[in-house]
Length: 318
Ligand SMILES: NC(=O)c1ccc[n+]([C@@H]2O[C@H](COP(=O)([O-])OP(=O)(O)OC[C@H]3O[C@@H](n4cnc5c(N)ncnc54)[C@H](O)[C@@H]3O)[C@@H](O)[C@H]2O)c1
Image (cartoon, protein in one colour):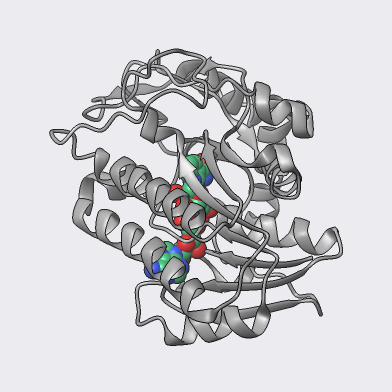
């Protein structure tokens, strides 16, 4: 299997590359190092990396697709990280839409037809208050022009349409991966990163531990090992075509998450609350029936996954 991965130096992209290589696939990956890191890239005979900005002119990208002729395209390259949605809304919106549009135009120009195009969409497209919780794949896309946070959700939702309409026009099977909070090693632990690496960093450092909001918001966290298994199973399975939630259906509050992290690092449960960000969804949990029928349930518990992340951080600190 030949697999082309955008955003391959990032958190999920690099783990997907590792898993694809472990399955004996050949991987070509691209990234512009906006947030990706060289040290995340696999060292493997069947892996090739090309530094490239998906927003640039498409000739180079198109010739890569033509010569590599991938069976599967995993489009993960995008600006992600909640703080960016608020600080650089235009940059997030413009970059993510252009990256997806360029990738599809480059694919058309290459003349190559893959067996599957899979796109990293997001649970954010279900909106601040989804139709139902747990949210099923037929939940409608909800965007709010008054919400700065939706710079990201709107870029992901427009990407959904780009991928679906392009693939249907060119008879390419497509998968829109509605990703619900993945976590694991190699995540950005800065303020631009996600909640788990930020909590672990704060818990390990001798700094005051803080929670954004009152901690009653809920999320569902999926360990990266489960994420990559589910995605590669789905993109090679006929039932994986269409819109697919990828995540863990266990819903917990952010305060409960803080407990798990603080227990894992043996730190007393003391924290201060920071103001909630505007339009932060109060609850988020996926209905995972479809992906479970393809790939089975999540195998890594939150406690085990967090313990692995803490251990990794401690090793990095040594
Ligand atoms: N991590 C999650 O829980 C989560 C949830 C929902 C959706 N997603 C989606 O999954 C994908 C990967 O997310 P992640 O958490 O690994 O983020 P990440 O930031 O670690 O990975 C994204 C990668 O894309 C690269 N990139 C950004 N702009 C680019 C450009 N113009 N050209 C080439 N490369 C570019 C970055 O350098 C980075 O390496 C993103 O599309 C994100 O929207 C992730």
